[in-house]
Amino acid sequence: MQLNGSNKLKIYNSLSGTKELFKPVSNNNFVGMYVCGPTVYSNVHLGNLRTFTSFDVIFRYLMHLGYKVRYVRNITDVGHLENDDDNGEDRISKKARSENLEPMEIVQKYTVDFHTVLRNFNILPPSIEPTATGHIMEQIGLIELIVEKGMAYEVNGSVYFDVIKYNKSNNYGILSNRNIEDLAHNSRELDGQSDKKNPQDFALWKKAEPKHIMKWSSPWSKGFPGWHIECTAMSNKYLGDLFDIHGGGIDLKFPHHECEIAQANVCFGTNAANFWVHANMLTLNGSKMSKSSGNNILPDEIFYSGSPLLSKTFSEPAVKFFILQAHYRSVLDISNEALLASEKGFSKIIDAINILEAFEKFNDQTDFNIENWREKCYQAMNDDFNTPILIANLFDAVKFINQLNNGKAKISKSDCNNLLQILNSFVFEILGLEKITKSKKVNDKTNDILEILIKLRDEARLNKNYELSDKIRDMLNNKGIVINDSDTNSSFSIN
Ligand code: AMP
Ligand code: ZN
Image (cartoon, rainbow, N blue to C red):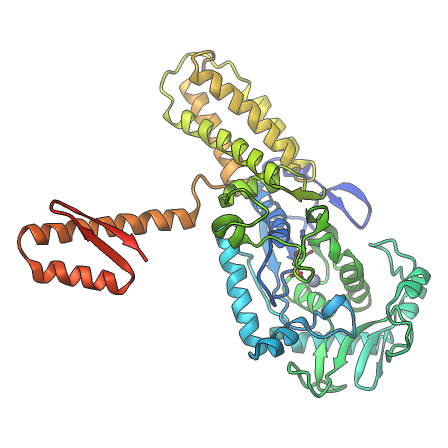
């Protein structure tokens, strides 16, 4: 199969620190991509959305190029402890205890929130969305293998990965470039509280304290798996011993991804993935947005209810456009001014597309080199998914379309169709922007239905069919929709 411009795609690989030509492991058009998903113990914030948007664009672009992508993004519903530490409390258990709920109620609530927010943000669902708790057996299997290979040891029912031993024949630090001695000094576990042989070692299995709610039987104890082993188990199960792309936010590079690489080397003799890709952080007032620190803006605030930090609400596509105006590897700071500017910029692009769709004054010639411009758009995306450069190119087309609109430039009918088709594919298919959001569409349709109902009721009133008109009024009233009657027609208000 001839893939559209795919042989020129370069991706920055965190493992080598350079941009490398992308070539799938399978040597054909199949691509396997794994992205670390959310820990579902609270609502997703805009920082999480930025990371999932970055990988959504990568997923969309790979498919646009003609690859058949199996995209696996997990749900972390056990094992991610506080402070990314081996001795903190499980984030989900802690929330469950504090709210007096079952851990699975917490998981369900925030998984639903995650899916709703991502759907409204027009982020495509992955091909497989496995949960950590659904793959306990696979995790135990890998831990047994690591013990068997002599790279893990058991103490008091917990199992730890032996980083010092591993580092004798492998490179622990291959991804994060951290030095193993420095890690010992920086460790929080110098107080000797831990069962570990060395402070650098990390937990593969933890024996549960009596108060711990989430626990499973294992050869070592009733307990729960470490955070890092879940991603190794799930990525390996669905994508094999070596797959193409492993992604996540840059804050996961160490320790999470470094540990995943160590585990994969012991179990499969690979670094798990050829390309390790990291999306940079969204910051607020210069500091990382995060769930645990409270320094964050929630999607609901920015899209619907408003935030004290913002002068107004913004639509989902305008916020997505703001995110895509920065390269995924750069830090991006959110501010009211930047959002206002992005909203303006995004509407210029949509206005231009609308102008082109309605355009009728065709000419024999075209004053815009579409082929050249299209090539520049692909070059931007092939250069490590450079969406800000792509967007700058889109504005070149916008400028030309505005000249067309003012009668200052010419275009032929076939070029007009061609330009529109290319714009549509970059703006909507690849960047995943939308002219109008789904939530707005639903609201508009609900409004339409209500207006139809009220017209039908007005007709019933006119025909003196008061039984029916009162019934409609009362039924709507029960749902909080109040009808305000006048002599000729009616309106409604919502309580
Ligand atoms: P978590 O639910 O905290 O495990 O995070 C889910 C994903 O969001 C991970 O890939 C994180 O790296 C990413 N993430 C967390 N905070 C931010 C942020 N402020 N900006 C961008 N990505 C983030
Ligand atoms: Zn992970």
